[in-house]
Image (cartoon, rainbow, N blue to C red):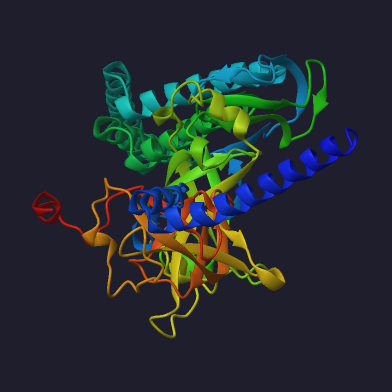
Length: 495
């Protein structure tokens, strides 16, 4: 009997505990259901705690887009320097990388043969000049006086010869003289008169001076001698290389002692900065460009952030039949760039490097290229948004989350934007929203931004941060990145 009492006690205790548990559950549920404070507490516990950052689709600014075209950096002038005469090199005064100034003598060949020829030409010029000076000055007075004296001398001889002739004629008439003596006297008079006429002509010529034809002939011989001497000077100039412009030596092809032929390159010089860049661009883009347009050019693998300003100085008028492009040439303004990026002197090292031309889409007709969707209806809009805010959809598609406002936090019925606008909610206040999915098409990706197209209005609020924490139908608190464009400052103050 003593052994059964503990068993019955345990059974009674367990029964009592079960009944108490059932009564507490029943009574407790009724109390909670009837207690307004408890219901309000439960409602607060179910309020959304997720926060997402939203922005109007039309307020998101996209990146500036550029057309990119590859080209080459070239020197403004690139010359291979040679001498017109061949010979043995005696001086090559520069090496690769040396800076030269216009007019500097860079190389020279042996000119000893020209030195000898110059001495001979100088003597010829002196002789021709003396002859010309004599012809131009005319005969001296002493020569004229001598010619006049000769005329007088012949006149006296003629008088004496005529007297002898008269005596012989008188003797012959008396039969005393011979015929031979008579003839000799007569011929002597005639010969002296002829000599007198020649002397008088010479005197007259001397008194008139040198003829113009003789002066012209002497002048011509003098000019010929000078031309020969000048040719030697030209040969001297052709026996050396002079820098045609300020620049840098790019190549030295020969050293002293080498025998070179005429017109054989010895040095190659590149003009000093500014350097140029050449590109081939499509015809439709080139048609929108003009001379002196300012564009950006980057060197090598650098991007637009490290580009250098340049201006168009030349545009090829015709289209390349192979590439179907037009060639444009830009002058780079390296001096406008900080020394950390580039300088005028450093730009010489760019020559031969590849370059990228950045043409803003806004400067060409192709800014609405084929990748921009044709807007067939108002339901399909194209807009920019952060790439990180895109959500992977079904079947390989992409989606965006749109935050639709609710009337208040307790409501389960969602309202359309026509009934409840974000503009009616203060941007500084917490706005409870319902997350909706909209399928979109990615048109283009540019860095951290993407251009998409889909059934999204420009005033819709896109979730741009926090997409990984929400999903379709989830309620959240919207935090505006910027104030909605449809809400004016006056409206906010009134609220």
